[in-house]
Amino acid sequence: MKLNQEMLSIFQMVQKYESISIIGMNKNVGKTTTLNHILKEARGRISLGLTSIGRDGEDQDIVTATEKPKIYVECGTLIATAKQCLLNSDITREILKTTGFNTPMGEIVICRALSDGYVDLGGPSVNSYMTLICEDLKKFGSKLTIVDGALSRKTFASPAITNATILSTGASLSKSMAAVIEETSHAVKLLSTENEVDDEILKLASEVLCKGRIGIISRGNNMKILDALTALGSSKEIAQALDETTSYVVIKGVVSDNLLEDIMSTTKMYRGVTFLVEDGTKLFLTRDTLYKFKVQGGIIKTINPINIVCVTSNPKSPYGYEFDKYKFLDGLRNNLNVPVFDVIGGA
Image 1 (cartoon, rainbow, N blue to C red):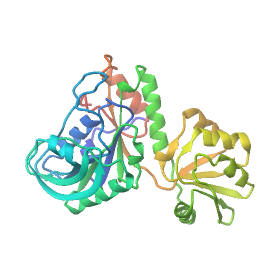
Image 2: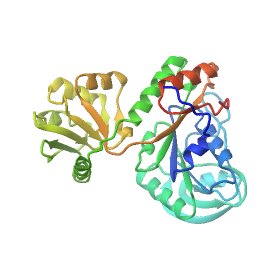
Image 3: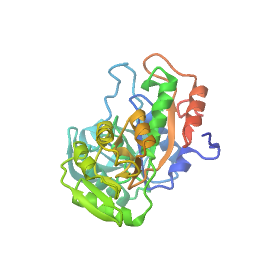
Image 4: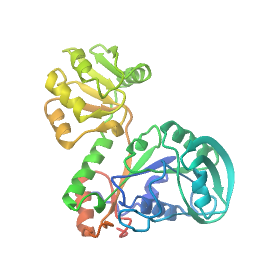
């Protein structure tokens, strides 16, 4: 689906949110370039908070020996980063708070930049810590907090952490442009999975998430919580609990190919039943399994919707090849229902 997006910049699209995360499909897809692009556009216009999920690699990519882009902030930016990362930064800063959250790079410290300069970001890898850090940055005056996502940590796109998400993709994912477009399209589809709108069902689902791992909702909104330790190993219990009165299966945790394949091979009672997951970050499904499940009558919805603001594309790979940037951009725009920007080439 092609969108007319000439009117809005990335910053204009994200400035209405209190918090956003930037997550990458792979290493070297332009995630830091996307972050710097937003920081540049936001300069002098809004008070920003900045933190990261863990620390995404070294200063130089070990495989390709290419220099990684640094993060440049303006005076007044609020930063939550690990102590060692702060020592690697060249900004003058005012320490506002020590959080007590420890990482391999030291305790997470919240500070305010008193000068322009480069910062090294390293944050917690625990969801609950990140939520509290975002709240602290807001208390200290951040109007927009940006969470720099680490490789493969897409759970931080969860609406429990940030209000909206930017997904970065690029040529480093595969030498095949078609494969990159296909994988990116699938990732956006999973993250943007349709959410449940029935308030009564959402209330029951919330109860399941508080009390257990798996819940079965039957006609008349009768609810039963299954005795399951994890969602991943519960296919047998779910299959046995399904009958002609089942309307919803509520799952806390990850939904994988194996889980759905096992259910599909054990019973036909899943057909017409809605499987409710917390949000799209919990869906670890291939295109084939998702298609098979849906075409045979299974339904998947989310309890909390994820708002993907846009996708950024990087046609260059550090592995010595690059895509035609216009073909890549057009291919993504024709296959995605969100705006796509090339922050490397400026399109």
